[in-house]
Length: 285
View 1 (cartoon, one colour):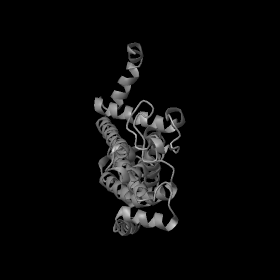
View 2 (tube, rainbow, N blue to C red):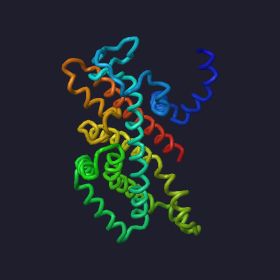
View 3 (cartoon, rainbow, N blue to C red):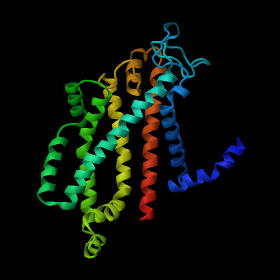
View 4 (cartoon, rainbow, N blue to C red):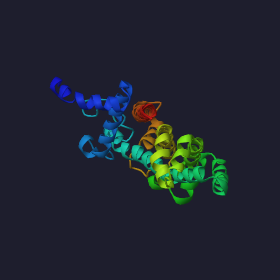
């Protein structure tokens, strides 16, 4: 074990430098990496079929055969937790990608060009933000049907105006600075000016916002699954595990505790890593 750690010290130090030397952020990155690997290779790590139940062992506590116990249907909680990490972590990641590509691009366009386009987009964002995001997502999912894909698309739609507003504000604060004027005087094209000079200068706060969005999206998708508008049974995700465990919480809180811990860990770790990366980028500019 000592030899294994010594062999990997250079790579660990490199990760620590990337995260600004923050040990807590490095630990958070390791936990996130472990969650992601467990989700990707779920069949290798899960000891049981996540949907296979045994009513004789229902609500069993942690034991040698079931490390985290079983739920009300006798299904292994650890297996469902591992398989549930796929939609629970993959869904928010897709939300962040879609909302950033669409909302970020429109915010960048409006903030950099200004004028009528910026005003029209601003009024559109005002209209969309007038509705509570989770309520709007519930309406969209209820209209187009339940399931992971409609839930992810619905949450993505609600995050587009938020991302556009954030990016626009960052761009507007940068476009009047001296380095932008200097780039224009040197004859730089819009593409080079935006992607090689402006975007790197707003990448720090942008990364911090992306990590916040990931955490919020995870909680929103968990909420949709909890009320039955997320993944379809018997597919496991952390929100549906909470919904399944609520009926037995007076008997035992075991089926609810573990998905709750997983959600809290994921949100905290993503924010710690994002903040560390953001600080690192800001110091290097």
